[in-house]
Amino acid sequence: MDRTSANLDDALSSPDEGFPGSVPAVESELLVATFSESGDTLYCNDPWTSLLGPPEEPWAHLSEQERERAESAVLEACNGALVTNQLVSVETHSRDEPLPILFNFIPMYDGSDEDDSYRQGVTASGEVLAEPPSWMISQTKRHRLETLGRMTMGVAHDLNNLLSSLIGHIELLREQVEPASLTSSIRPSIETIETSAQDGAALIEKLQRYIRHDTQQHFEPVDPTTLIRDCITLTEPYWRNEPRRQGIEISMKTDFEEVPNILGSASELREVIVNLILNAVQAMPEGGTIRFRTFTSDEGHACIEVSDTGIGMSDEVQQNIFEPLFTTKGEDGTGMGLAASYGIIQEHEGMIDITSEPGEGTQFTLTFPPAEGDPSPVEKSSTDSPEAEGASVLVVDDEERVRSTVSRLLSLNDHDIDCASTGPEALQMFEKGRHDIVFTDFGMLEMTGTELAQELKETNPDLPVILLTGYTEAETDSQEVDDVVSKPFSGDELQATIRKHVAS
Image (cartoon, rainbow, N blue to C red; front, side):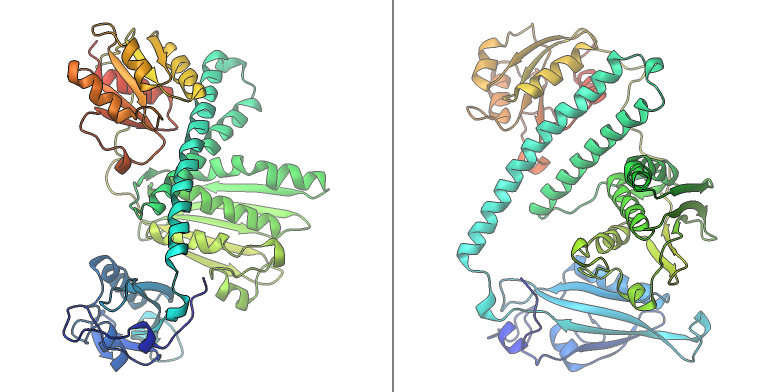
């Protein structure tokens, strides 16, 4: 639904005076405030004070998370950055839904030269975005959206099952074929298929978290150079093979310096780099060169430079390039690629700069703060850890592909495998003293994985029961389960889980 700036008398009708967090109705005009160079509030106009708070506490009516986002935007603008289109939501007693406000934070300069010596502070302006009451989503539409969310979660679970089979068989293929027999052309293809499947799994997890309103990120140290090399390989058919069929030559040049790791999500950062590569190809219809360079800034930040020799951009295009739905590709463009990339970079506390001239190509520079400390150790095989080979394992899953994949992966470590397709069948098959550990799916028709775990634990309290799930953690919490392995999984993850829970 399009957001439309509406009269706040409608948006904030019948407020309760004196109620904490409630605000009086104000006319539809800009919310304006100014901040000093250090971020202190100098002035707030009446609409701002009524809706958000007085000058001494300009974000009083925002939640803690929204207040942190707003204060961060002010400080970023105080450092000289133009921060636009920042959406902040304010909770009000008179509305069921948060009231969205679109902010722009603009650095102020005293003089024509915009450098630090002339910076004076920040002007912030906000516009309330609210729908008239007649546009509010009806209960029927809400029900449909809730149903769509549940359907999406179900589809995501099924896709995770498919990806589990795909990733598992890729691993089995590598094990069955001697590494020495893999040619230099086949090995990158296998690795690219595996990376694509893993990125697909990460995208599904992101979708699940969004539906559950859980956007917390689990960041890990990421090596920028490895990230770029993966993206170049992943997109090679697009920038190399397909243009050549059309008689177009596009070359890829790299200049990598050692840079610090980035703390972030590898799959999301790959999304940014891949998008920049695809845009560069589209900007060079007659061919050209894409260049990647990594270097460390004077502040110790990791920098990634992506440039092309394409058609370049006008000043007007550069000013709007990160706006949602803005595109120069007509009906062939969605206008969301760079907008999404900009959002991902912001989530990683990074910055992106553009240098471009019409006919002279374009250069994007991505800057990220370094990951602090040493990378978190990844659970892996250790010579000091018990190998737990030859364990007796019961695998329970209603998807034959998943059962087969798990069974074959565990067989690589000489485990004895029994398989069941339902919870009741697993209860009949299970033998105390014979099975050392149970891997069970969560979403099964006759009995869920947690219900199976409860049944098994009643007579075998020390039995390790591991949940294999394509859902998210919050939906699979159970005190009866000893561990959770998310789909898709690798053979190393399964082996590490057995090693963790089964004594040698």
